[in-house]
Length: 121
Image 1 (cartoon, rainbow, N blue to C red):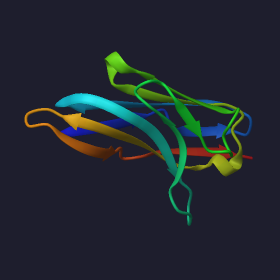
Image 2 (cartoon, one colour):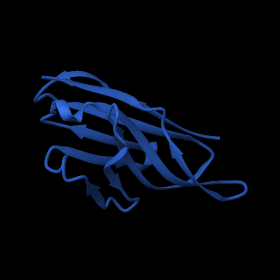
Image 3 (spheres, helix red, strand yellow):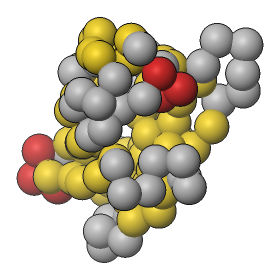
């Protein structure tokens, strides 16, 4: 069984910063692309940022220049540094991972439980 455990959400004022973490655990053979998505009240889930196993990154236009995604491969952890936060960044943020589990090998896409980020104006 594979789990993604997120942490780091909370309440912050406009212009503030938060750092989200997501740690993957379980019978992981290889951890491939990882990413962060968010879902605001009444809206669909949207991509925030992704990072490949080779550290190639992709960002939503709305967060470019403010958010930075990174990963620590030995720790099976992905981070999202969020700066210059705006009220429209308020959402539940979900971690996502594409991975291969061992014994027998099979591909999985896994989601975290979500962490709430609230930006007050």
